[in-house]
Image (cartoon, rainbow, N blue to C red; front, side, top):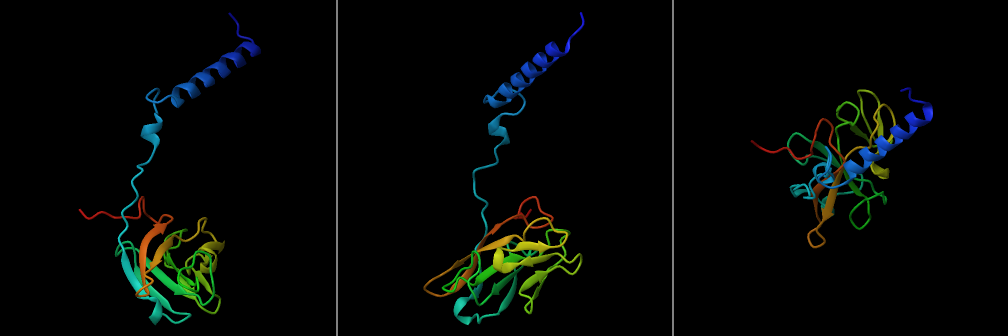
Length: 175
């Protein structure tokens, strides 16, 4: 029996529809939605005091590591309101300093108000959420989430938005 084009297309569409239906039903098929869904548990980031807002003049740069000792980061007081900035002036931000291209350490260039990777010249703008401006990187710098204690002025790192270069997860568990 020879299959004509119309019959072949009908059988192909029916097969695809059956496959789509089988994978969409819970507990059916090879991949159930429950197995494919990542854990709803939030990642337990540590809380780390980085600086005090009252002792942080405009233009100040503070280097620190977060969320662990193998993750260099930088806190900047830009002196003007910036995207996702914290503090009364909305001018304090923090980022991982590992370039998203190959993991080289980016450096703050105050004269240009940019973070620049010396390895392949990717450039990131901390005033615009760590956005990649130019270069070979394909992602923005991971942003360190900050919280300011209104009573003391202490600035705490409380999380990371984005994946730190070279990691499957931002939290490294001690063995």
